[in-house]
Image (cartoon, rainbow, N blue to C red; front, top):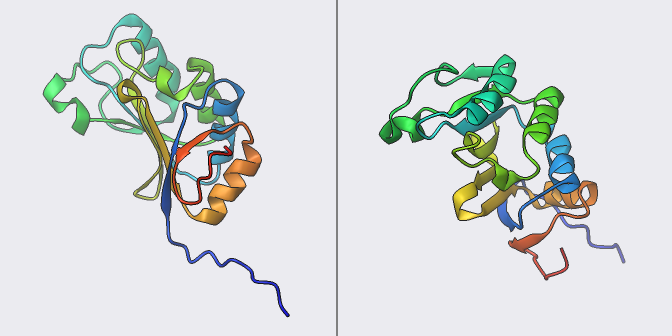
Length: 163
């Protein structure tokens, strides 16, 4: 009798996570290198000096969105996200500028870090709502959990309260 092997059909699913902080956050960003192409952040209105420091530190990776020193009216901020090329250097800078996903919150930093694979959101965060989720195949999620063993899952397919 042959053992049954689970087949990953390429269908994506979403898992909601407790906030990745500290080493868990850094491991998550390292795992994303080579899997995602872009990161985005929302400027969300008036930019103070601390927020400008973060924007300037990421500037060499910016490939789209408003100019670093642009004043963006609040009503337009959600449509004018900063877009960055995601690579190991950007992952390192993101981990130096914040200790966790929910640290990407206005007014101290641009808000709501999102990592994109193609046009699809791979990781989505909404800091002020304490929401963080990843969208990927079950096989990739298993790899993520192996690479980031301290990752804590709130809900999603196959969630049994272990992680």
